Image 1 (tube, helix red, strand yellow):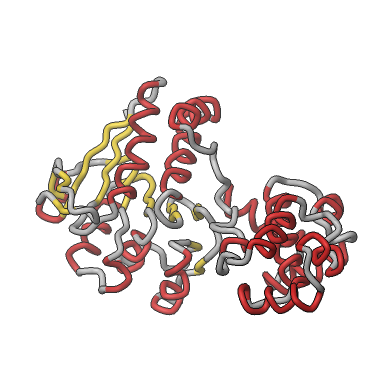
Image 2: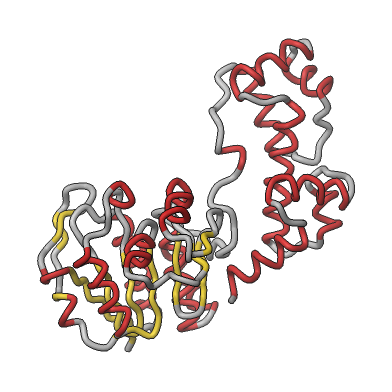
Length: 317
């Protein structure tokens, strides 16, 4: 039996609670034995982000010995400071647990409790810079699905809690059981911890003009294809000057920079999957390892090989 305590509070994100809970409950159907206890300060029921009431099983003071302490997130952080009693509650259950984890902005609760000082951690990408500024003793990794640093785990936003829960199940019961849980829940098994939270093609505005949208879809579908400016203009049925103007007006960039960003995203995914640097360079359209290296250093500050090693560390350390 493995006892898990989920620390909740008013305005907790409902999916932060439900997603991981479903993973552990589903694991029980396949032979695991997780016992989930929802706890809060004072043992009071809480109101979730949707307004739905969440019944609480116990006061934090009464949780007893734990295998895992999970601290949920919510939009209340970092807009408001973590209440001292909530930070103390996190310290209390962490002191009783073999490992500690946070979902989404639950990292702000762990940080306020001093549990992330000197460690690597992540949180929702929108709030990573805020976490880093507020807690300089934490090495924030803003573009990871989840980060493991010793017995402390932190995950990115919302659905990343499912990835983290699957990772915990895999550590407890092996890959095959985690795979069965993922298949049953119809989710990925599992997005690796160091994988990017979102792709560059999703960061900017969506093209409004149909020819520009068609060009962007073509680049995303085949990053290694011929995406020179004349080729893209021909695909759109526009002059090169007109297409360049549309890119600037609607996406705030040039066609060449957009293609580079999509290729960078493709290369990052290939490196995440363990492909060699040279093969990745050709498969993503950069043509050479040196071209890929230059772009990688520009976007990440590290070489593709260093990035790959860091990705593996985020996933396994």
